[in-house]
Length: 211
Image (cartoon, rainbow, N blue to C red; front, side, top):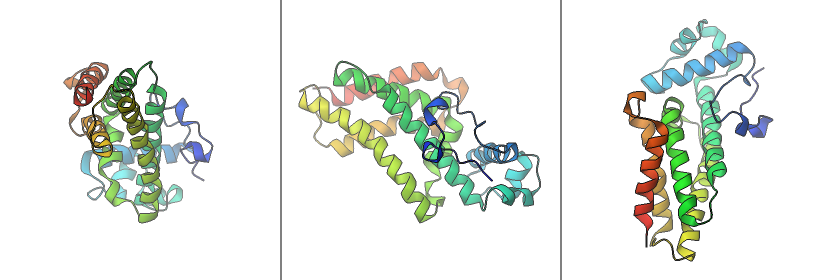
């Protein structure tokens, strides 16, 4: 049986967010299929990827995929759950600082660097949501709301402290998150250091909300 990926199934996500290793997925065949699916979905898109493509990348027969996953969509769901929970943990871990401005910079820097460093899985997680079943999409959407709430709370705290000027909290939250998320669409390693990119985007986010 597949060992599920997330904290809700007994896996400590915070222990694996740094490098997004997959050793906690057992057996090894299920892990190979999962990582093969990440690469295939990122390269070709979910709709253009076949189960044969995924199995080939894992060095297995197409029929072997169904021993571990009931469908291609289930693979996408597992990847989406893991990626979204990892991203949320990055934000929660970065939310530290003496002022809302310090916290916002830390959040955006870490979130941007994560999307650059893990641009392959982030591309799948962020841009293949429409392929999830309604039930699975609802579960992922709960995590996405938690991600938004983490940033919105910092912005609200900045407004309360008269440090930020924000007329539309939800809209500004979306704009700040979009800065980081869009990195996954275009980033390749030759485009620069993820940490440097994170600092640049932190500067941009702070300018957006400065009083």
